[in-house]
Length: 299
Image 1 (cartoon, rainbow, N blue to C red):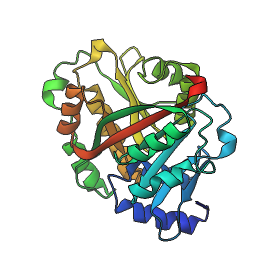
Image 2: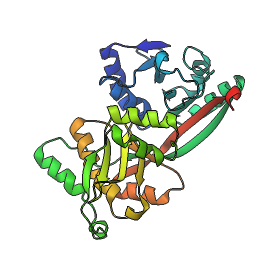
Image 3: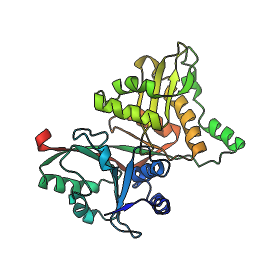
């Protein structure tokens, strides 16, 4: 595997991966931030250059100090050749199978190679599939007229607005909100996840809504692969359009900064899926996939 470091190489790869969206989204989104200051200190590996078949993005080795930190020890993978992936994954210079880690991607076909290599190395794999959504509205340039069109397109439905009994203010989250976010994140609620949430809020955009009392009542944030994650609304405030309000705020921001974005939802969260479809997202068939890998010595 080759490590790509030159800005020109990363730009060529970024443009190439765009042609394979949505299957390449995890790698494409991560590469966006690598090309813009690389705040998570990640590196890009390819099996060949420029005629690559497989891309693996991982933290640099000095980042992966904790053998039990799934949040930091995250690999994003895209391949055009699933039948050759097993050889790539088995290489200890590519993946450290001695520590706990996770692999994320938007290709179910990654799974066979992951499972085979994991079995050969006595590593337990917990697999999660969810529904992947990408935004379907046409891309708008950042002129003032187009911004007005975008806001009209994303206006909060009146049926939701009418349920509100107070005024709610949009905010950008900061690191002071990390503990609140972590406490309500289904995949978090521990000290390692708290450090991850703090790092996300230090480097990427997070969006929230304040009640009239100045307390956050709904929020979500973005992470190192440009995905919208960790969304939550307190039960008392659900069904009032707060996620919709933040969606308007965030999408205007993403368009203005030319940041790619997408989101996943659990297969049993039908209400969330319907909200995303109503908002203008599209369910894409490739899905969102996570393989959580744990060496037997840590099980």
